[in-house]
Amino acid sequence: MKMKYIPGLVALACMGLLASGAAQAINVNFTGKLVAAPDCVLNTGKDISVDFAEVVSTKVDGKTYKKMPIPYTVSCSGGSPGSGQLKVMLGYTTVPWGDYSSIQAQPLQQFANFGLRIIEGDADKTYVPNTKVVVADQNNPPKFYAVPIGRENAGLPEGNFTASATMTAIYE
View 1 (cartoon, rainbow, N blue to C red):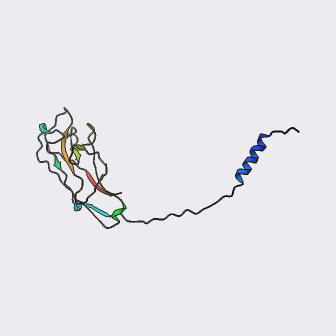
View 2: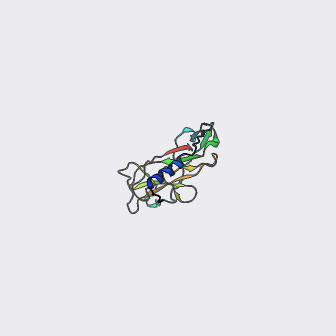
């Protein structure tokens, strides 16, 4: 007797074998502890001032001339200190030239070619705005410096300038 091969019936029979296994359901339990981040205060809540006094335009080099420390403190209390890492960051409007990381000096019409480069740490590393920097020790927070910088070959005018940034402490 000759057997007839019917592909559809064979596939259907195999599907029935696969589907006949017992289904199993288990519970998934989630646990954790909700904690509060510590409250952190920068510079005891007071604004930070860096006074460059007089800056000689021909000496502006963007590296060492009038390199000024940005003095600040950070203090955290309460919460659960082990719940994350303390970080600080600076946010500001950048110049539209160079590496685009320097703070734009004001008034803009007069000082379009002048800004303040922020240096992170003791080396010559340009800080990139809004970069979070880890504070490993509240008693010795990361160092930041500001140094005048001018657009190359643009010439700098005389006059009073200002610039501003916002420093933020974040627990992540």
